[in-house]
Image 1 (tube, one colour):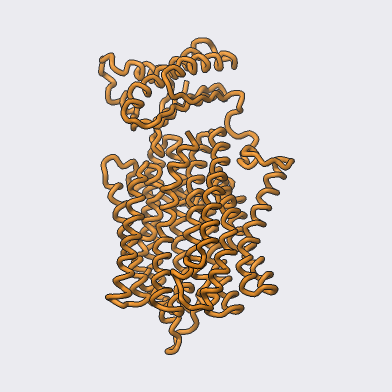
Image 2 (cartoon, helix red, strand yellow; image 1 turned 135 degrees about the vertical axis):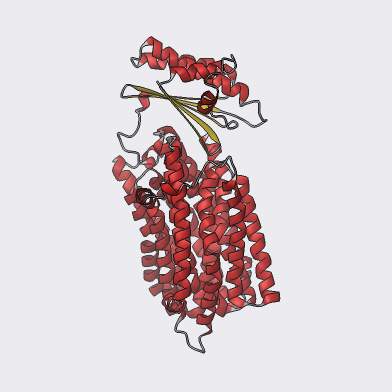
Length: 583
């Protein structure tokens, strides 16, 4: 079920990861083709500011993925609402402060970015300032759209995400065309077109949060400092990751300007834009890894975590290998979409073909980094982020530029990603005390984490015939571990009753393939039974509350199980029903 869930989430998450990058891609094409090399250079100088806002949005989004994944997995509804409330507050705060800083200090920021001084003959400076002024209008939607994504994934609203990204892209293309051929507002118009398209995506997503069935609720009283601290800690690795990228782009812009001039900077702008779209495949894969790892880690589900490690690495390598091959073959026509200047075009084609080779090791590094963030190994995640996205790439680029000029800088990406992967492997092997390429080794779980395998019973069911056998096996499992006959039988009966109920009422609602995952654990005298299914939403705990005085014989099995359990929690997350019973 984990592999199937991962693949279902992956397509939507890749498209969601492209939310920001698609607008940047469209802007780059239109600017490069119709506004000239100066405008493309200006866009390159402005890009770090876009990445700063993306960094802040991604930090909150990652905090939501980890914190909300944790609260949803434990059935903490107040915690989930606190997470949602704080993320809304932060989105508003970041937008307001960010807009004020950009509008008040526009000239100083453009100079800091490398666009030079504000002089009458500095066209690049003027164009950089104009783009930032157009872009900043869309800051609230830019931030809001990023923060919505994990909530939409957790609630299972994947179709709405796809629609939002599709209409946003179509809107940006249409508005860019109007800007070039009708309004002729230059780089300011390009930035404004992106802003409007962000609002299109934002309002499509926003509609879900006003529905009655929305699982998330804004509660002002839950906006507290302790919630902010928890979310900030959970999201800090992602912020460090994004800030490292900003420093890398700033460093490489300076290095390329000194080695190859404006043409090299323009070429890097094209490579970065195409690369960011390619990175979306890696980022989408890693985002799913982050969300699922935080949920499974809270649930102490070692089996699912190990399965997740193998799945995320396989999917990342498989998809990114295909993307790499396509970009190498079609590098020339891709670059020609963006720029016409022959010198810059030649640099960009060569650079893109070299750069894209780094995508496969990048997919592994990024997936592992996000996975480690989800299992609360923040220090390791932070170290990987800085090494992967700044230190090793920048260092390799600087060294190689002495020997191969601009081409050496492009090879810095391959060197940086490869060295990062080698360092991760060394850390994993040192911890395992042997060279061990297994999901268990790379899962990096603490030795005392969760329930031991000997005290865990797991089985997946898809037919009625399998239920009776699972019930019998679970009873024997409990008896063999010292539980008394009454409690052992109670566990077996609970599995049989609840699983039969799911098959009877859930499997028949649609024609989809359904599975029931049973997980039984024994720890410190507590017996915990988790039943997970991918059928239609049904909350047996709430059902019992609503029918407490009903003497009907209907749903007798649910009534009996709920009375036998000492505690019962229900969660609907990622399109799954989770029922957690304690005996």
